[in-house]
Amino acid sequence: MRWKAIAIAGFIAGMLNQAVPVLAQTAYTYQCRDGAEFVFAVFEGRRAAYVQLDGKHLTLPQRLWLGAKRYSKSGIAITTKGNTAVLKRSGKKTDCEIVRTY
Image 1 (cartoon, rainbow, N blue to C red):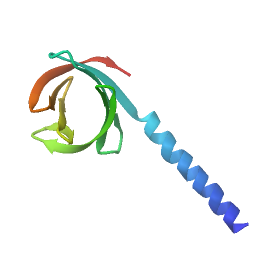
Image 2 (image 1 turned 60 degrees about the vertical axis):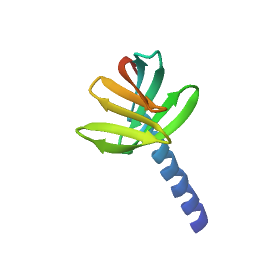
Image 3 (image 1 turned 90 degrees about the vertical axis):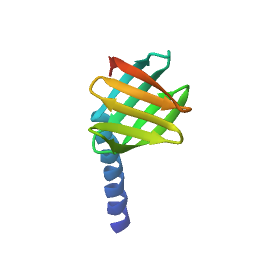
Image 4 (image 1 turned 180 degrees about the vertical axis):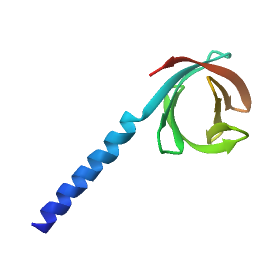
């Protein structure tokens, strides 16, 4: 009986843990001056961005950066402020702006 209660509690906790971030998600499509386009999603309460860039899915940890939010990992950095972003990869920067919000 006790194992059954633990299993049910674990299942409910898992469902709640998965359901809450989905409801709190905001996603944006950015278009950059160099022609790049990427989808950028942030889940409330998490310090990471989920990015789709060049056909790849990336998780970029958040770092504080001079009043803006910066997400970076493995040579890719995205700095957001308002409706704009700067994408840096391979040592090159390009300015981007939101073209779609989900």
